[in-house]
Image: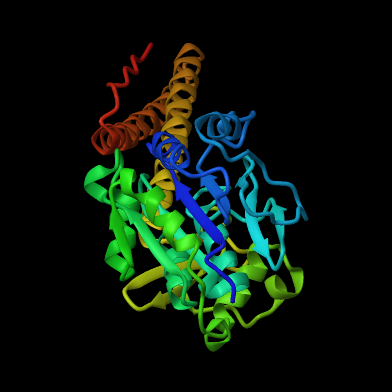
Length: 339
């Protein structure tokens, strides 16, 4: 009988310290493969694999596309790529972002659940927002074991707390107890692996994450069309309701939890407001310049029209500036006018 030999772990803010503490307590002969996803900048390189290798006895490295899975190793998701699991091997794909992240925890967790079912242990650690919640729900649905770091023990408690609110997790533990749990579970055999088939929607989402074009172009999308647009590409978002868990995915695969979508919308709104503020300021400056030129040429009527337009644009810019300062508590923006 197979054991719990596939362990997927995800973290965001505050997660490096948690990962270090966990892997430092694992034995050299650990019988499972670990897949580590940490939200990192898409630019540059990360020393995360070296940090994990120094922290404990298990070797860690960035996962390679089509690499075979071996126990006793830590496979780290590379920057700006999703780490996906298939039967016996790893896929590294620069697919659509999930919850504004690539690598995304949900993508790894969901494909692990789809490929390995009850053999999977999913662990959600410290982080902001709700990446990892949908993936942990998929692991639970396929009969895997779900673990979260105790939110009171996490530097950033949002991710484990959101997971607990949406999924009936099997274990909620402080960091110091997670390693011993993983050792015990990795030695337990799994029963009833064939009893839980892969749900159709889960399979479709896994194929979308792997950039399978036949699935992406299929008009039969998981969920139902929503009234929201995708903050990444502007396309229609499909709404997926998994019990208490509300999620969204667009035609080309960008995916969001409810909190992730709200954050992405807020960022898009801020970008749009700054663009509008900049355009209005430029419009004000041009109108005053044209007004000054018109008065110099004794075209009084034209000068008044330009002055009225400048004043109107100034009022609109001031209104947007107030919104920006209130929304993000930015430092005051001084915009002196030269006449």
